[in-house]
Length: 361
Image (cartoon, rainbow, N blue to C red; front, side, top):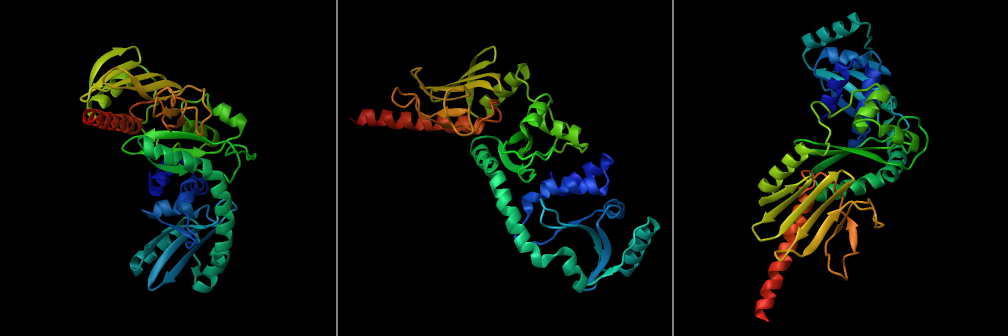
């Protein structure tokens, strides 16, 4: 979802410019740069710009190189070091008159702004220090999320992440917290969204269908990414989706289905046994052509593993079966195909090399 799409969703839910800017900041925090003292967002229509003008900290018309910029300015804050400017621009004097008259008719004044006044307005000379202070806090608060995101990108359908920064505080109540909550939307692209809640509000969020629906209800802002979205609940639909993915993506033949467990065969003779009882109770087992278990991903909480309890056993031999690492998987095989494919293909390669080596010796 783009910032422009977010703005349109906010407007469709009746949010004013101030609340829309709050939503924009939650996304734009991911694009801040040390050499970009302003986040500039061009608006699609004068009515949209008017919405932002009404609650802006400053409104003005800025002229540069013969181009007129109608700006709705929102000042920098402690948790967002760059001001936001929502604007429309034109070099057409007729359009300038039309837009200016439209804004004035709706009670918006647009005094002229020059470079001398613009620089202190955006506080660009202090931006580098503001950014550095903010970025240090942001890095510390988002470290766990970035580690999880990197693992999810390597092993699942997730392709990108958005960290909704609340500067080390609970997004609901503002209390300091080091807890992290995440939710993932799998569509054309997988997007993982992370934010911080205190223990009380994290527990409260568990009673809602999704984390974003909880945030939407509590804060009165639209839940992004959720138009047409469905919550994954294990059942027949999950079985059907997994069978299709295992056949099409992993090139398997389905041998049998027993409840929430699917057994499938690869052309190599390797078997995948995929059990999906729940998102927190699942296992993906790999067997070699002799039926010997050789690798597994599962959710059993009996290993101390970072980002656990979900973990991967890359080797189930007696001497190595307790050597585990984070799997970063979800417990929904359709989302975890990348990790499953990597595990079975690596096992097949080792098997082939061992067979060739055995023949040579």
